[in-house]
Length: 496
Image 1 (cartoon, helix red, strand yellow):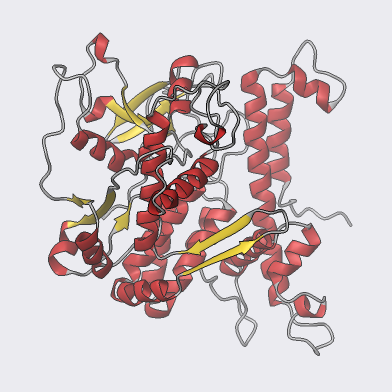
Image 2: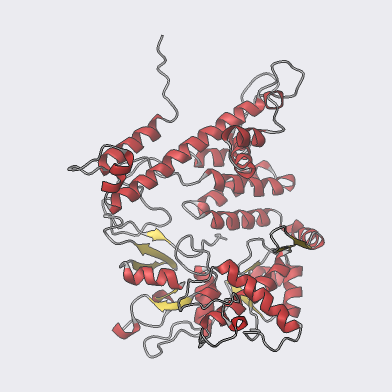
């Protein structure tokens, strides 16, 4: 007898097939995959990539459910606890990792989500509620919707690609981050508080890059565990370690695990030194200069250009330069740069001493005690939310953005405002959305932080930018997306 039960992946497969068939060139479809892809236009091949993401999401959600079901199955011989251990695996994450041949962290994330969304059975065999029902619901694909007004900027989401399976608002990796952080606070919270926190985290994480989901999850966990923030700060400080190990390749591995307040100085200091070096003009003659004076420290001439040296290598050079100065070396290539640490908190935390603060560039929040220690040591700038602020609109009489405006843009955008870009504020510059030469005012609603690469993308590829309710939206050109669906950028702020 033929089963009539639907294939869990049938909808995703049908959506991908529809997009693939619609993307093929009508005149020259091609005989093989390589030829078909070569004949796709730019917009079509990007739609295919988006739909592949939807298929992968469907596969990973189903894998999480399968893994969760396997984890609850008893051993067939009853000599081991579960089917997982009977099959020779230490835990479900290792099982996925070895059977799929993926990294252990990837298998652990799928298994963790599986445990969070799988309904266990009670003593009498009845189905119980899964530990994180909001996460289970958020992993389901959203209903497809067609927007009649493609020029309107949505509040928090954007339509999916035309003709395929809609993108899910929460990825499996994002779900794993939220589950992991909320489990850490679950020991001191009621079930209702945990469910409410899950909903808040998911609402803010919709369509967000994974690094933003991580930051949001940590903030939500901190709100649940405000009384435990100070002990956690102390535990993190006690766990600080720094090791130096020489590798067989001849390189030396320097590894440091630092609490947020310590990492704030390191990150801000390196970024400030890199920024100063990056903006400093180099007039080096490759035929006569000492190799040690070359800007990248390699002895090879470096042609001009902002993206020739990767950021991680720039940080290594800046770290070396810092200790060369400490050693009293007069031949260091750069001068040490004053460091500014930006910390944001709310007015209630300042008054009551209960709550948390966040450091620019560091995801893990800190408590009021760490905030007071930093205030005593650092050249910090407190960004107090819901408190008095400076006048930040200068109109058209002033061309350059002021320092206060740049700090306000850094608070709004979090660095380069392009979605998914990880460049911090020190690697960006404030730019006018509507050019100042064409009457654009020097106001926050007309300003945006962009790194050099994405600034060129805006101008060279003709992207448009609009600011709606303090949120920057990037509108792609028609050759990238014929619907020109706005893409949210900037920092995602956790609502009070």
